[in-house]
Length: 456
Ligand SMILES: Cc1cc2nc3c(=O)[nH]c(=O)nc-3n(C[C@H](O)[C@H](O)[C@H](O)COP(=O)(O)OP(=O)(O)OC[C@H]3O[C@@H](n4cnc5c(N)ncnc54)[C@H](O)[C@@H]3O)c2cc1C
Image 1 (cartoon, rainbow, N blue to C red):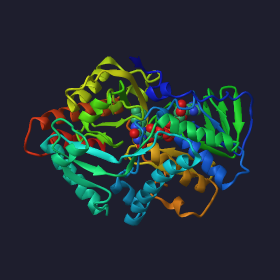
Image 2: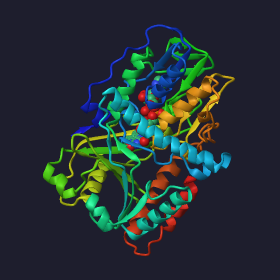
Image 3: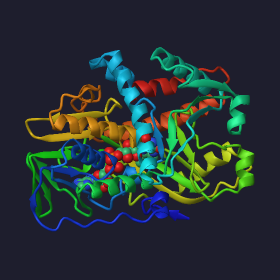
């Protein structure tokens, strides 16, 4: 089994080559971070003003971050908590951002198809499965929430176990929410496609160029510096490593495995003919996809958080987490040999209120964006489009989406952050255990208490 080395997708694709920054210089815009957020911002800026000289600085290789390691759900699930975002915006604005996500999801896939670039896209929607009475009750509540926000049957609906089985045969499933709002992609190929566009646009791309300090007008890369009136900070889950930013975004860890390629007979038995993304409804959530080359890729939390906002070692996963993810696959499809051929993990950025931000400070010339809480494959493009429009002072309606707001309040200092994140994960695991053994259909009191503490 290949563990780490930043993941299955990177092993399936040629690496993305660039060159390190070799000399100090100037630019119109410097972008820190070469994931979806940074690269889409670069492209949006270029589209608005092709004369801009734009530099992107990536600390490692392009694809090193979450953008090269994720589950490949290009989805238009609501990103950010509606009640948080509607706190400072109207209901219409919250719905507007969700419509924009939907259009962005489709536009990303259609754009690459039109260019003849294969990003492994297949439109299968998503299926969120309930496997006990409590989970089904939560799905009903979630459906009611979607309806209250105006999503009709065409966007999300509840199906019973029989209808679910016609789509995918998951052991012990009692029902599911189904939605067409997800396109399966190979996330690394998507990133490589964006890099190729950026290159073609003349955007200067540098890898192995770790930014060590940012002050208005100057980005430091060790002994070198790039001076620019406008700077973009697009380091999402890695932002905590930058000076003064330890508590802005929690680097939440998510671990994944990829099984061997299944045979056609095995796929027939599972019945997972579409490219639907599947996820669970337990508090310790799982998510997965059927890959373009016929494997099951499945992810979950594993070790959720490392002390002092620390990171993994090039995506290596501990044995216990691998075994736990294999056990989920076995539990879903008990007859299947669920051994992992690849395991990896990565970090995603979570703000204190679990909602994204696009924060443009005109006085410093610094744009910060991120906090997609595990749903950035589509969201990063929308945030980037908004950020680029703000930077260039455009009066487009996208600059008024609810994500355009100052960064939310900081996370608690250590050891509270560590105790909180890991303690909550234990509490959610305990709640799942209780619910699995109960037929009341109620959500465990442990999980309700954990939700209040987590601020969700
Ligand atoms: C395992 C996993 C599964 C996920 N699954 C999904 C999914 O299925 N669907 C979905 O929508 N979202 C998913 N996400 C979340 C999604 O991948 C992220 O929200 C998204 O990729 C964030 O993009 P980004 O560009 O903001 O950050 P990143 O992709 O993390 O990019 C940040 C980049 O900044 C670089 N960097 C950091 N520090 C510096 C520095 N000092 N100088 C220069 N560069 C620096 C990093 O190396 C990195 O490449 C998942 C995330 C993970 C970890």
